[in-house]
Each structure stands twice: as structure tokens, then as C-alpha cells.
Amino acid sequence: MRKKRFSQITMILCLLMVLPFFMGSWAAAKSPKKIEWTFNQMALGKWMDNKVFGEWLPKRLEEATGGRLVLHAPINLVPLPEVLHAVRDGMIQGAFTGTPYYSGEWPLGSFHAIPGVLKEDDEYPAVGNAVAWSYWENSLWEKYKIHVLGLTHWPGINLYCNAPIQTVEDFKGKKLRGMGYYDSLAFEQIGAAGNSVAWDEAFLAVQRGVVDGLVTGLVVYDSMGFWQYAKYINKFPIHGSSCAAFIIVNGKALDSLPSDIKPVVKKVFKEAADKVAYGNIELVDDSLQSLLKRGVKVIQPSDDQIQKCLDMAKGVRATWLEQCKKAGSPEAEEMLGKIEAFLAGYRAGKSK
Image 1 (cartoon, rainbow, N blue to C red):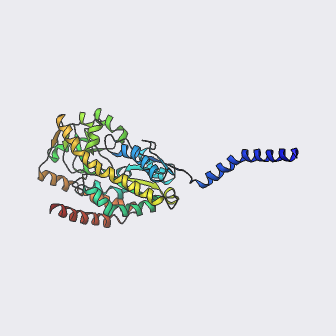
Image 2 (image 1 turned 90 degrees about the vertical axis):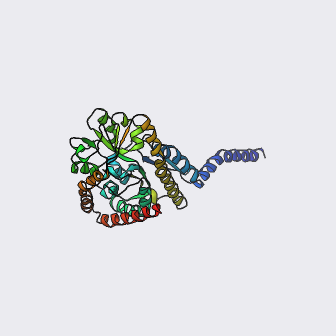
Image 3 (image 1 turned 135 degrees about the vertical axis):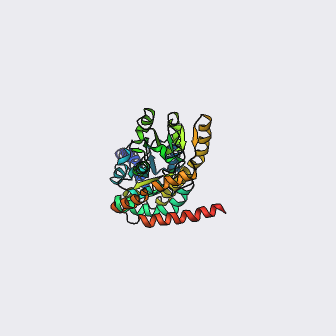
């Protein structure tokens, strides 16, 4: 009897010892696997980008997916020119980045750099979502197996220089840094010297006089200190009013998400993109008013000088179309036609 009771007690103790193991295994099997994504982002001063993508978005994703998707968004993890390849190859799952940095290999993303296409800050988010997104999605998938999750931008694009530029003649002898190939091409066509400087080196280039000025967004010009050395905001249409940026993700990473959270993830990323795109527009005027108080001057050229600039730089459009064809994007002409048709209607609607 004692022996039987001893055996029963031993069996119960053994069960108590192994039960937590089986319970843990069962719970682990039942609970969804946690997915971790790493997205590269740029350092962008007081733009909304870093705060939204580095702080707001990870929290929002974790909340929306019940903790199943964790996002890491380090700054400058991957050199800008290598981002498309890093996302394509799965070194990182995605990125928050600007399209001008890939104008050499993927010019389709740089229509906004054609002088005269975008005239107001609100135009890019509107036309980007309505027209460009589908073309970019198809192109990036074909070339890199990359998906687009959202379109953002850096509005208030201007030419900032250490001297006023009131006429096209004033461009002669100036060394100017653009945001991509097409800015540099426009500078060359109107008599300046286009200078290719990596974004991470742009401030030092302006500070040390390597370049006389640069094209960038007004908020980053303000918050990153460029205004101290290039105190003139010259309103020449070297670039459209906005510089395009986007959120991209590796195709396998997105397509392998569980079916129940994939639409949630896409919705949250789109929400983040819109938050940045429209929030950045609101920051432009605040920065301008602050800059004016610090002695920065706005140089507004005459209408005839603006038109002369556009006429001299019209070769940018032709080159863009040619480069798109060479890069395997013959749809560029169709896309640009739809963009300009949309913008004509958009502007007409605003003027009513």
C-alpha cells in the first residue's frame, strides 16, 4: 500500500515538474510569432519625418498589431545610394527615403525635379497619391521587388545662396549643390556649376564655401543651420516646390505577413505617410517667419526672369524622359502627361 502511494506521489510530482514545460510550449505555439522590421531613415532636422517614423509609427504599429510587428528605424544605417539595393536584398526590410537620391538608376521617381511641374507645396501629396503611386509601385516591383507603403515629401523647396540671385545672369560662376542629377543639370543649363555633394556632407560644404548654396526644403534649411552661411532664399524654379519621398518595403517581407495583419500594417504606414506629408507643409510658414526675424532675405525675381529660367532649363524635361526610357521606364511620358493634366484640374478647382 505504501509502495503504491509512493508511486502515485512520485507520478504527481513528475507531472507537476513537466506541466509548466508543456504549458509553455502550448502557449508559445498558440501565440503568434513576433515579426521585427528594420527601416532606414535619414537625419532631417525639424521635419516631422524622424519624430513620426522613429517614435510615433513604431508605437502605432505595435498597438495596431497587438505587438506582433516591431519596427526599428535607425538613422543612417545604410548609405543613401545603397538603400534600394539593401531593401531589395533584404538587408533591411524597408526605408523612409527621398527619390532624388536614385535619379541615376531610377529616374521615374524624380518628375518633381523638372522645373515648373510642381508650383505649390500641396500639389505633390495630391498628385502623388492620385497618379504617381501606381506607376512607382509597378516600376519598383519590376526592378527591385519592392512595394510602396506611402508617399511623403519635403515642401518649401528653394535655392539658398550666400548672395542674392535676382536675374539669370547672377547664376554665372556660382557653385550650387542640388538634390539629385536633374538639379545639377538645371544649374548647368542656366550658367551655374552643379556640384554633387552627399547629403551628410552638405552642411560642411556650405559652411566651408565648397559650394555657394544649395537646393533643399525650407524647414531643414532652417533647423540644420544652412541659413547661417546662405542667407538668401532665391525664388527661382530650379526644382518643383516639393521634393518627393516615400516609404518602401521589401516584397517578401510584406507579402509574408499574416493575412489578418497585412491590411492593418499597410493602413498604418499610409497613415504615417500622410501625417508627415501634410504636417511638413504646416511647418514651412513657421520656419519662414522665424528666418525672416533672423535676417534671412527672400529674393523674388521678376516674372520675366522666372520664365527665362524655365526656358533655359527646359532641356531637363527632355533629358528626364530620355533617361527614363534608358532605365527601362517608357511609361514616364504617359505618367507625366497624367500628372500635368491632374494638376491643371487641381489648380482650377482651388481657384474657384
